Image (cartoon, rainbow, N blue to C red; front, side, top):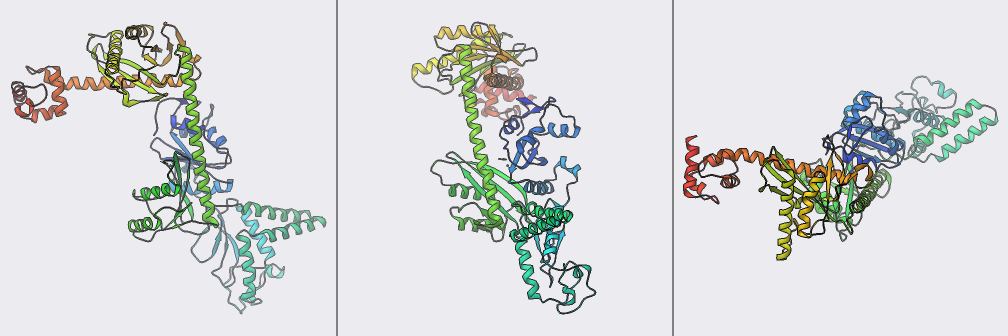
Length: 635
């Protein structure tokens, strides 16, 4: 869900103007209509809240409703950067998993709930000569057989009452000595609900027959007892004993409540990892459940690239090797959804790392198989969500590019888009940049930076024209020499200027001089420097509100080109400040200063170098090297 960081860019907001991260916004669209637990995380990936839900989609989306009045919930939501979830089969499993994850992670916003209660177990005290059935909230290593835990305590008590009603096991806590009388018999014996083991009325072998039947009932084979209860319920109803009939009905319904499949909490107290893998032709999803002392304490989701020829057994083998070699705790038992390649060798390697035996199991039946199936269910769902999200993104991009082509009059496929921007402070450290989007996605390897050469002072229009001129000149040179460079070729279908109609006119003239079929447009901003709309090549403005599909892409382009320009300007300004001192040395101009900084990396390194080393720098001479060395020696 999990797949197992936060960007503050406001692609969406909650109803009370708290920014929603892109990661979270995308995940909310994938929430399933299934019961499960959800884990809200902060920008560091730390779990800050764990909750359960009958329907994950409905419950999680409630946190981001337009009108929330709960102060605590507002505080929680303001810190949510990501959310993950685990799908289960029923609400009972959600209760149990929520409890265990809260205990394990102690999330900040769950602390006030004081959710450290323990759910009840039904215990069969097999460690005693004459075992009894009881409800307890403590799971002790005392030799007894524990069933549960059960979120519905009332149902657990009704099941225990039904067993004691139909099987005359003792209910007292006396220490029974076989064949001897211990104290006085209780009322249960006189009303026929106890066999009187304290009087030595029954042998252990005969008593054990009932114990075995009770053990079978508590293990899930309760149908015979269930039908006995329903039969007696009807009899009491026929006798008009409606109160007794209603109580028997409650007992029968308690069996349905208690014996729903519970894979999340097993009956034993073992430590193990449950690992399941699901794949499509391009990617695999691995879901891992950490089981500690019989409880699921954490979930891990990882994605792995795979080729069409990679078998799942190879991918799972690779995951196990890499995951457990990274320093995580290795349990004694690792339960897998399928066999892995080189299992014996990997088990030996993990045993060596752990300092104790490690073995793999592939369950066919039982609680381990059920838990493995649940992990697999989540892995399959993750793959489907990832595939559908990728398809949705591709369709969204297709519609955005189609809309841009229509509103700007750009015929044909729009594969490459470029945008340029200028940054300076009162004309100082004047720089320009171009960013590139291919197929609607950033292609940062093709970005270009330009130190403006032909413009003095703050003239953004002329500076932008220089950037486009130099960019197209380089492209023309490579076309002529038949040496295409992906940073300059192929030519873009659209070039955006970060500005209005005048900016567009400045670059449009340059493009027309080259004779290229490139559409020009401007990214016009409002007074708060937020994208307001497009300016087409005729100087006409198109409001962003009119662009249904492309507004998100245009915002991304606008923000990216502005960010890149500011980033380069800061870098250029910091270099200018560093090279300023060098340019004060006789014979050292901007080029030599830049060359020295590139070679040595800092003023401190230049000051520590001798004249001979300085003179070897490109563009330097022996005399210039001596001047620099003498300067730093004197200072």
